Image 1: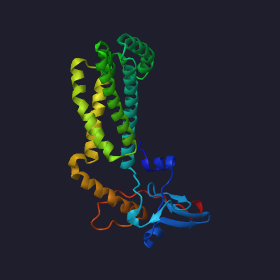
Image 2: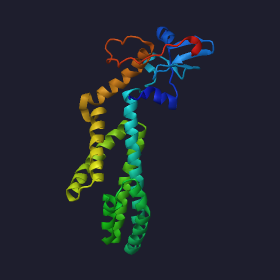
Image 3: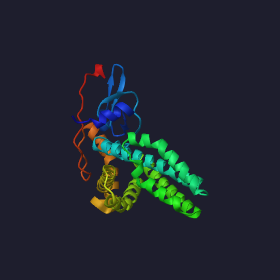
Image 4: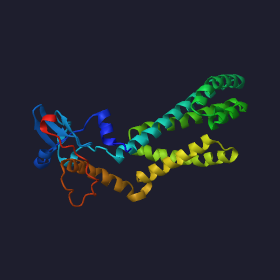
Length: 275
């Protein structure tokens, strides 16, 4: 069973309507009914009652993601949540190391106590704290001197900050966050591969596979570092899609010189008295 991403998103977030200045397009995007004027949604193609959300030239129409674009957004937000959660866990670890860096025994006792408290929760979600790379790193710092512990805490803090910033950027679909995600994730892949040579676990294999897929997906799908035409092709696609969105929703042909249109949206033809 396929998911109708367009109507799914409109059901949760609402329709997006637009009144273009071009009379021919405007005529095909709206209709008058017994209950008022309705405008066609640029995402799902259904009619929505009320005034349009915006107006202006067709090439200034809002870029409304739909179909595959909505699916891509869902995947990016899944990665964003994972990055933020990871960053928050590392922040807690950095705070513990920094707070008690003046006493190695206190750090060890606090960490062991917290680890005991969080172990059942982590086990419930299938996360092995006893073999976690982050936990192993923290435990090794217990034998270091105070200055080393402080440096370790600062390093963990920087790593956590990168993860949180990356997650927020991915949630809002920022291109700089996609670059950051690829660079930061790829930088840690050799470490994850090395850890597998030390001890193999399903969690490590799953994490490595997820990160490899994420890097390839963002790298190729988003045309980073010059791939598939690079930034120029990406920007050209974005500039052309606003006009294509309006033309597709209105059933107009694509202008010469623009990118090929996607498959037209299925339109529900309903009597005016049912709109």
